[in-house]
Image (cartoon, rainbow, N blue to C red; front, side, top):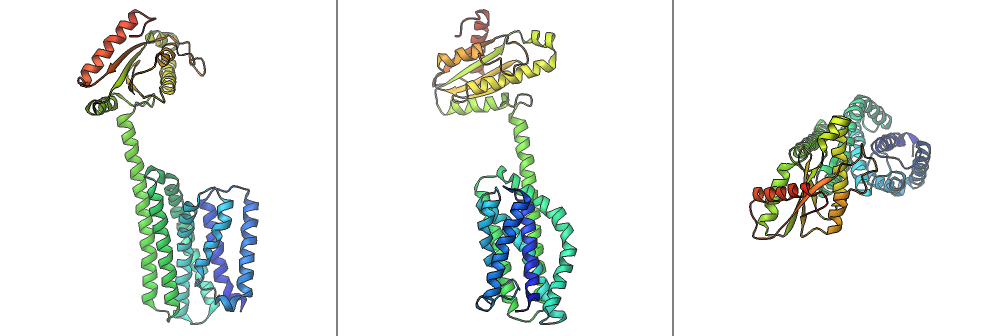
Length: 369
């Protein structure tokens, strides 16, 4: 078998491996990864050359499915999980196999049965598409891979299925077209297919971008920008939800004592750090019990299913862990606790009652009602 027949397949393999390496995160150094893939490829091509007649190897992409064997070294060389490796590999193969299929059809129109012409056309197509593919599409593709987690987990399955189907469709078309003479119609079909795949990917990229923006807007609507806690609006929604469900729950109203003194003495920047530190501390203490909200200013509210153990209330009151990373000394916190049992009052009345309990305790610093 003439060595020239291997050139298109070798070029296809080179761009595949290069593209996959660009999109994935290596576990090892570049040199170790390169040598491993080089040796693996050399062994495969050695087998292909030795059994070229038995495998019907012609370097025309008809054996592209055997490329799946590269999942073995990929799995050990890159950090990505197997489904993600399949997504990345199929996408890269669509590009390189698409270029090869177009090269075969274009070369067949110009001069049938001329293998060197296929390789020349393949190089020309790579030169024309290399910059837009690696500068525009690949960065967008990496962005989609890194941010697809904004969707549910089953989106990975959809991406795997979609990319595999696109790759298999291209393999099937390439195999079918190889049986007949080249034509402008086949070139048009391949061009339209590759363009459709490219456009669908750009649409997916835009969907991910929009989903991220929507999530950011949701975060802004329901969270306090300073502390990252849920805000008063979300508190109202959650209290209405547990009240309608007829659940027993506890509401804690926490007011930081002498917070104005912190701002006056240490400055407002330190005051903000003080609020953030208390937010983290109270969230950690109540992590297994409920959720903490910033009610406004130096006031915080927590909602917990059932009753709250006295030990937890003592930890909140004393903030024994305050010293670690604290911006300034702790000035204590006044806490009001209300156990709410069905039938429930309105949300506004619940908050008013627990607020009054908090102010009663503020007058008696060592007591929590």
